[in-house]
Structures are given as structure tokens and as C-alpha cells.
Image 1 (spheres, protein in one colour):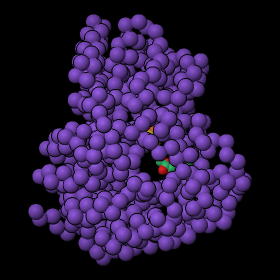
Image 2 (image 1 turned 30 degrees about the vertical axis):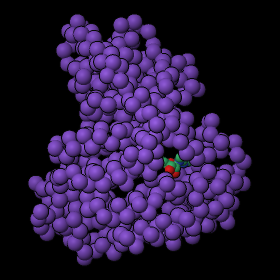
Image 3 (image 1 turned 45 degrees about the horizontal axis):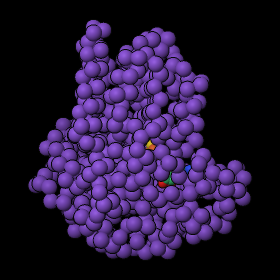
Image 4 (image 1 turned 90 degrees about the vertical axis):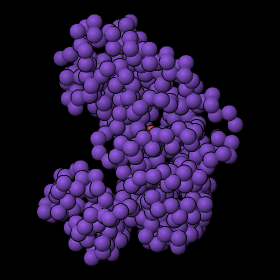
Length: 481
Ligand code: 5AD
Ligand code: SF4
């Protein structure tokens, strides 16, 4: 299938880069040689990666970055639409922009991302939040320089939800990433699955994969820059390459990445169980730089609920995947997402989720109460449980998982594990002789003592204590390679 046409053409890229230069000139004429940008991101890692791309565009326009919203010339809020709670938080924060605009009327305020892609949100911003200058959705991401230029040159508010619904893949703009040794790398965009609860296919369009060569080039560049823990991102990485005419699927891509010289870990998210194949797990087991760690959202334990969710697997199929993977990789860590209170879910069906938890014994879970999203199939499906009953089930889920997490973490005590030492301090300050944060291959959080000066290095640590959320260890030696 023709994929090239989906990649932003050189011509379009040049047009946008030209807008970047013009923006730079506008600020220079105003006597501002290094304008300042502030960015804020809600939602998932994919959104973090999009913000890094926006920061890349801002860098081309000559912007520096600030952590102080009040001193910024451009303020970007990249939004999430996954649950109502996420949207309400954005509306709360957008209110804050009105104060900023009063203090600094020339500051440009921008709302973008998944939430902004929805027509009803754009309408509400247009009518009730006059101090938001630019609204654009995920489809228009590649046009951000043009939109900012239009606002600066015309003084009018700009709304852009259009664009090729398939979206254009942006290449050749270098994202501005956070300092450190962890990096995100988007390998694909969009989603084709239409789980009945999920807004993502509506706000991010259809699946489109980056060319493997482009992914490999970017990966190599990250390794050269010293990144050591690199996460490949996509809404469903297991369908990577479906639009590339069979030349490279996800396990093939992992194998090519594993062959890149250097000292790094590669991990990925998110995997859809319906597309997780034996080939994926075989490849993970064979590739030493691919972490033995997977985020495999199961969502529910009842086959009837799974069917209504349009997940296209059964609990048994899920369990057999986990069995297969664990036989190959006994140390595999598995995390998952669960939705409680999906419309129609009964207490008995919820009990099947608990039973699945006891069978799989996840390392940790992300748990959510169902939130109806406009435009999705589940939006007006009827409930059988009350809000209180759903909350009770939610609390029970956490209780069971917390016990399992603690039991799993206890197994590490006394063991030696390889970890990557982070830049972050132990900001929670518990057991505070363990001052540094680090991560295991399975992405378990380990607070370390004796790790000063070892930031960004792989070391061996012996685990001395455990809690539900973290491990605590002492560095015993630097990893010999
Ligand atoms: N309500 C609650 N949780 C949701 N998720 C996605 N859509 C919804 C919704 N409408 C959860 C799923 C998904 C994770 C990213 O968010 O568990 O895997
Ligand atoms: Fe990420 Fe989905 Fe939220 Fe968009 S709506 S930011 S894809 S979680």
C-alpha cells in the first residue's frame, strides 16, 4: 500500500519551515530575539511525544523554553480526551490563562491535542474562553507554524480541526526532548480498533506507521545522544507495519533495533492482546536489548463485557498469551489497564475481573472507572450498577491488586538486579537514605543508596526492602560490559 503519500512532503515541510522563519522575524521586529515558550501536556506518552515535536517546531522558530507560564510569549496546552476527568482538568487550567492574558496581553495561548480535536470542545472554547488564541486538533499538528503565523500577523483567533483524517506523518523535525536518558519515540499514529468505550480513533484518526528506516535513523540518533531507555510508542504497536505492505512488522522492527550497536534498553507501548503474537514474544525473548516487560491492557475479565467492548479476544485467549510469554521469559513483568463499571457490567462479571487478576498476577495495574465519551458506541449504553456499586468494585480491585503488587515486590528482596540510575531524586522522601530513583528492565521503580554520581549508568543493586509501589536497594557494583 502507498505509504509515502502519508509522509509530509519536502514541499509542505519547507512551507512550514518558512513560517518558522517569518515568526522569528515578527518577534525580532518587536525587539524579542529569543521569545519564550511554555508547554504543558495532559494525557499519555503519545501526547508527551507530540509536545516534544511541537517544541521542535518552536525551536525552529527561535524560541527558548521556560517553566514559568507568566513569562512566556507562547503558552501551549496539549490536551487529552480519554476520560471526562482529563477534560475537566484542562478546563480548570484554561481558566488560569485568563489571568496570564490580563497581565501579558501579547502572550499567545494555544490549546491543541486530542480534546481540542473535538468539535464540541472547539465550540465551547470559541464561545466561552475568548482569551484562547489558537485551537487545533491532532490532525493539524503539522500546520502549527502556519497557525501561529496567522494569529501573529492577523491578530484574529485561529481554529483548525481539519486536515487529512489520516493525518500526515511528520518527518525531519527534530523533537526537543527532556534531558535525561529516557526517551519516547513514536513509531505510528492513530488507531483502527474502535473499542466501544474509546475516543482515540475519533481524535487521532486511522493507523499510520512510520517507515522503518525513519524509525531506525531516529533510534540511532537517540543512542548517539546518550539515551539509554527508549520507549517505542503507538496506540497499538502490534499492528505496526500493517499499512507498509508487509515489508516490516513490529517484531521485525524490534529485531532491527536490537541490532543497533550501543548500551540501551528498548521497550514499547501499547500492545493490544488481539494482535500480540507468538512471534512478538519469541522476538522479545531472543533480543537482549528488548526489555522483558509488557503493558498488555486486558480491560475486563468477563467475555461478555469484552465482547461489548469490541476487544476481540476472550479471557482464556489472554491467559494463554500470558502463559506462552512467561514460559519464554520467566522474569517478564506484565502491567495492564482495567475499566470498572463498563455499561451493563454486573457484579458477577466484575468478579470475573478479580479472578483474572488472581490468575495473571500483574505487576501493577492502571485502573479506571468507565467514563462515557461522546461519539463512541458505549456512550449511551445502559448501566446496571449504581455509581456507588461501581466505586465499591473499584476499591475492591485496588485492594486485590495492591496485595498482589506487594507480594510480587517482596520476591525481589535479597536479589541482585540490574538497574538504570535516573536523574530524579527520591522526592517522596520515604526511607530517605535511598536517595536516587532507578528503573529495572521490568520498569520497576527502585530507590537506591550509594548511587550518587552514577546517573545514566547501568548498575547492579541488591534489593533490601520492598513496598507496594517501589523497591529499595543498594548499589553493589557498576555493570561490567
Ligand atoms: N473510560 C474509562 N477508561 C477508559 N480508557 C479508555 N477509554 C476509557 C473510558 N471511556 C482506559 C483504557 C485504556 C486506557 C488508556 O484508558 O483502560 O487502555
Ligand atoms: Fe493519549 Fe488517548 Fe489522551 Fe489522546 S485521548 S492524549 S491518545 S490517552
